[in-house]
Length: 158
Figure 1 (tube, rainbow, N blue to C red):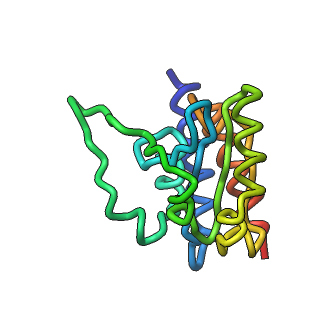
Figure 2 (cartoon, rainbow, N blue to C red; figure 1 turned 90 degrees about the vertical axis):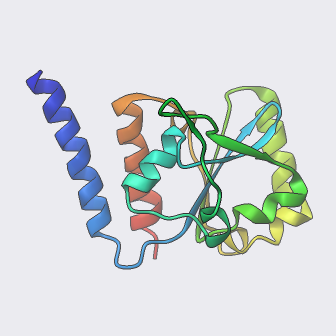
Figure 3 (cartoon, rainbow, N blue to C red; figure 1 turned 180 degrees about the horizontal axis):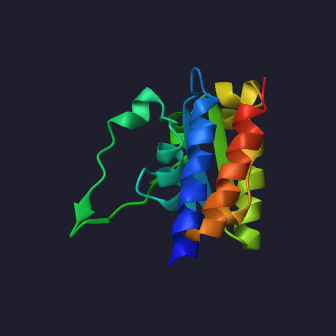
């Protein structure tokens, strides 16, 4: 329909406007805190795909991660990491979202008090942003809200 076409065109226009603000796009990592641990979100995830569309790249250590496709569908949207692997998420900017449950919030607070967390340069530079659960999934309304956050946290920062 015309409305759907216009909504998609508006979204694409917002992504183009975002990309136009980037003279030197920062590297970006994205983690999801969930009941089983911490997931390093991959390109094939909902937010990973948006970051890629926005012209944001992953740090060098994440660029070699191969994403498997099976019948055209991403098989792995996240890689669970241990607290000892937290250095893998270091980037210019780090977005963190958690599942909407008390154990995820508790896990996030524990992670933030761990000495390994404080060693991350992104933490030391205060470029970690906790974002709402709509970063997890799905649709154009959520995608536009993620783009709102990119403008807020990436473009508006010095």
